[in-house]
Length: 422
Image (cartoon, rainbow, N blue to C red; front, side, top):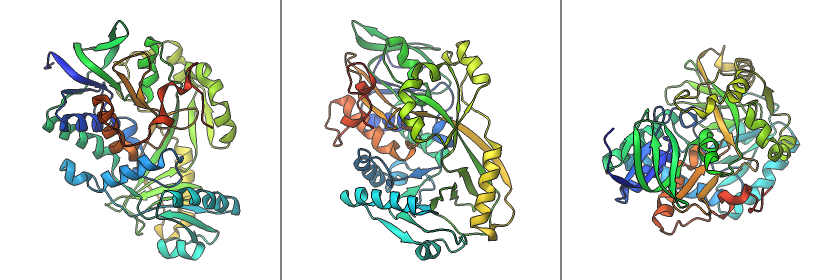
């Protein structure tokens, strides 16, 4: 393990957040090291829909996401990598008046921030999607400046660019503990040895609570399992990211289509479900139709402490929900009959780290000088990766962040914090 005697900043977790943070730190000339227990971008960051979406976000996230879109527009040139970035819009469809009313309500939020979001009639939807044939559509909400990229490429591109700028990137090197001295962080214990660092940023996604828990830091997140399937090449042209209210889909540059059940997910019950469950009751009540529960091996493993050993689970690779994906394929064909019979070439699943208020945690940990966290993005973090990486890099350097991170403060779930915003 080649390493410096001491780093300015050590980052735990090599997904898009950690890799982007390492890049922006290295670009600023900061001595940075990124530690990933498996491969870079191996979990959530490569398993999501690829959405770079401003539309329908919490108002607190919109300014951040607008700035992130600006960064995405130049990110391929910045990193010197092809990421299949396409700025061709995000469209959510409505099949009932209730959905249209919800979209109209959010339209006011978008207009407040100057977004190019608009409500579409059913006729306009069919004009935008020439192969779409579902006559039950009532309309939709569309943001032309939204886009998408290929998830499997992005974190790796940030990590490579960080290396070029001088950062050290360690794959297959888990962190077992954060070390501190008189309350201030001073380094990490990794499976390849100790390292010293003046500041530590935890960007470990679903693993964040397990890293912070030994320090007595509250991070009440739960894992939700989402599934995606990839079809063979389809004879249709539909390059926008579409959420139809029944399924979600994005056509890749090669003509294949990624399909998912739009709002369904599984919560594999674990010990954390008991510990953090009460904080999630309001969210569960609002989304009870969309989340199903599974009791099986994850509970047994969590009771045995299996998920506390970061060398046992290098990459979380849960089984996809094939029943849900087959249902999504049938719904897709209803909307695109000309696509013909849908055949999945492959399917995958990933765990999403959800927070009780569905907002991320970003900032310094009170009472722990030098310790920062960026996690809990609740299924919509991929698009925020560039701006979060830059913000965390600025924050740890003491520079103006340029964005309001107050709504995302880590202490909001502690006894001293004000609790959930919702």
